[in-house]
Image 1 (cartoon, rainbow over the protein chains, first blue to last red):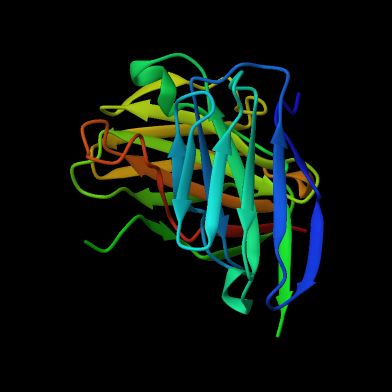
Image 2: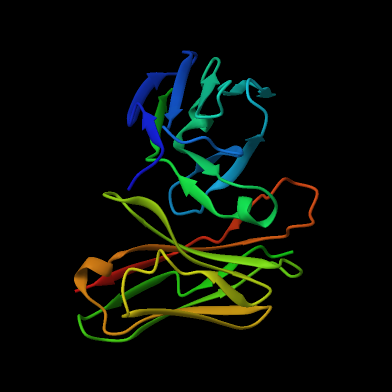
Length: 114
Length: 116
């Protein structure tokens, strides 16, 4: 059972455009992470959010955790070709050691054309 | 540190053969995870270890799959016998619970398995 749905599945945009990726679930998570995966490599952590309503910024990337901790969004401003990759959200239930078990979302494949 | 090391990077085998995938976690990390990634099912957790002890193997598809972690610096995932539907990219990841980053998992480059 896939608990984390991401939308859109695929996104092809031009350099300089803005975009938002969504991660939705019917479950409440204690924390949520966003990873980026490039071809031929493993996912790399971008950010972790733990508090409902929390907003974190990483240069041109803005991450938000929903107030109810069931959803999250990733907004990229002025996308660049280097942003191309597969974006994955991952949620954890529980606390302490239990948060190490992640449930990954379905993924959003982003292509930024120069 | 060299990061998480996986071998081989690519494996092509025939149906019915035994396959062994290997992983060396980052030194000092106390958690190790095995994942499988396919287009249809995305990234799925197969099993994870804490201090070399299997904690949750509920994601292991069936008895044909087994994983061991004989020591803190090595783990293997075996498939016997292999089937074409096992074709996927298998990732190993490790984590240090007491690191400064909140439960950040570090992934290896993956092993692309093709079963003919």
